[in-house]
Amino acid sequence: MGRVYNFSAGPAVLPESVLKEAADEMLDYKGSGMSVMEMSHRSKVYDGIIKEAEADLRKLMNIPDNYKVLFLQGGASLVFASVPMNLMKNKKAGYILTGQWAKKAFQEAKIYGEAVELASSADETFSYIPDCSDLPITDDMDYVYICENNTIYGTKFWTLPDTKGKILVADQSSCFLSEPVDVTRYGMIYAGVQKNVGPAGVQVVIIREDLITDDVLPGTPTMMKYKTHADNDSLYNTPPCYGIYICGKVFKWILDMGGLEAMKAHNEKKAKILYDFLDSSKLFKGTVRKEDRSLMNVPFVTGNEELDAKFVKEATEAGFVNLKGHRTVGGMRASIYNAMPMEGVEKLVEFMKKFEEANA
Ligand SMILES: *Cc1c(COP(=O)(O)O)cnc(C)c1O
Image (tube, rainbow, N blue to C red; front, side):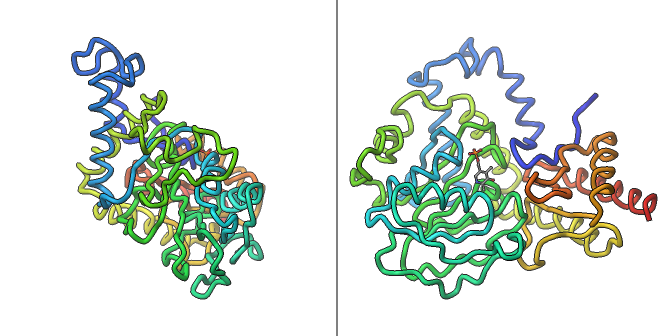
């Protein structure tokens, strides 16, 4: 069996050219006589890899000099704790609850201080983004937290909340590098890379320099302090070397594609094919309010659980895999990250049309 169309929400599809390059370099990275997996993170060769990855990410996102880029480990879920540990100086922060990942971050923050729910879309199964134009933000809050793209529910903040002067912290795990971002609007952006950029185990943190201090919550482990990693250019200890190397390749792939403007145009075109079909279909329906739809994660249902299961089974047999919806939502979800080719979405829609005819 060859490569399938992989609609997984994460770990997810990566560019084939990146995987091939990594395969070519597996035994001997550029004449070093060893794999990147085998080399010292203190070596000159590896230093080149991590520096180039950072430089390419800075170029892609146009990251200003007063922001640090950190390559850390532990996944996005560990950041749910490191954010309050590092940023909750007043022990109070506001959270906007737009799905499970935001909720988990909110619950984690409660361990460290007062986490306040500013808005929520739980009343309609997180199928929309709440109005965030006038939130009950108080002066003593350290930051406002959002999950910018909700991987499970398929919603996206197309307008950032009015934080009333407080810094914005955003989990961009599932929309990272899918479109241009104005970094200056955030105090901190972070992403677990396994959705759009690389292998699980790496988290990218982009944080404004003045927020990196020694003034962290008592008991914060050395490894959880952003200052530890910022002072050591992400090489305080052994970083997830191989994962960072793959991320670096994906950054270059996006640069070659024309950068984030081009990526966004590509993603919009791709998502439109699927959303247009869902809007015209008599069998399949999208589950998200139209203006809040994600370009990356597209949940849909037939309205009949048995038919949903039949669709997932037949789609899998036809080479469209990982379309089953999240266990908390049911139905289907197509994750169409950067590396999902246009053709993958076109063929999926063709398959859905045939399924609809056969099951009318
Ligand atoms: C997947 C995901 C996470 C959790 O990532 P882990 O690396 O498994 O901890 C957090 N936030 C968002 C938005 C995600 O999509």
